[in-house]
Image 1 (cartoon, rainbow, N blue to C red):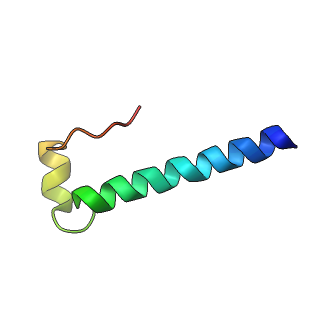
Image 2: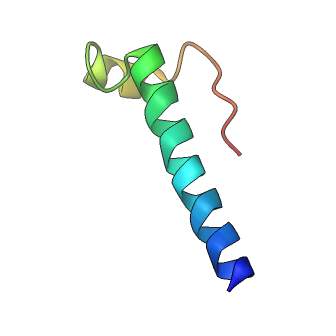
Image 3: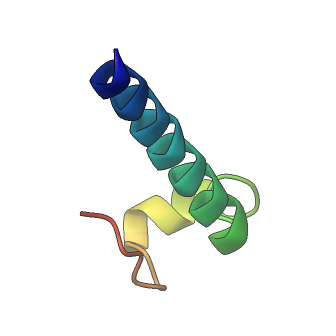
Length: 47
């Protein structure tokens, strides 16, 4: 029970972190295709 809750919280936190980093760098909003072709100009800490 506690382990399942911890896993759920960790999964939600990971998704929120990815969405926040994408919003900050603007990879999904302003320069979507150019950002994907050239690679990330700002190194993101994604494991």
